[in-house]
Length: 110
Image (cartoon, rainbow, N blue to C red; front, side, top):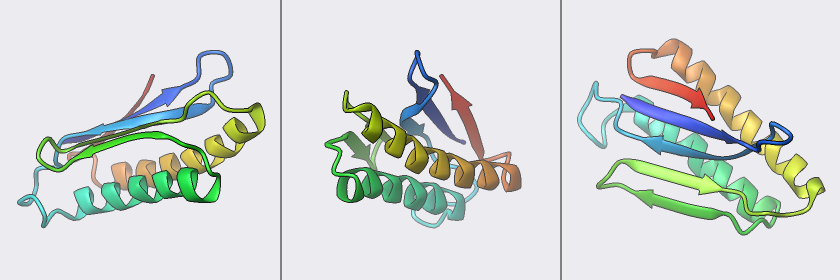
């Protein structure tokens, strides 16, 4: 199972990052549609934060460990609001995937 945990800013509740761990498990690594979809959504999220907004996010990905994480550093409130929009859009996409494949994708917030 893949678990995506969205990280919330404690004072405002804005999304400020994520951690994804594990393979969906219903197909071999590299052939799993849920894993590919989750990876594409999250990698696009990182690109949006870095290349569109210019935020120097802390990003890490490991194919061997099947995990990926991204954290938005301390930036202006305006940039945090914009980052939240990108992260909320990704969260909506992953929520939709999780509803279709609840046995392979779990979403949490902390």
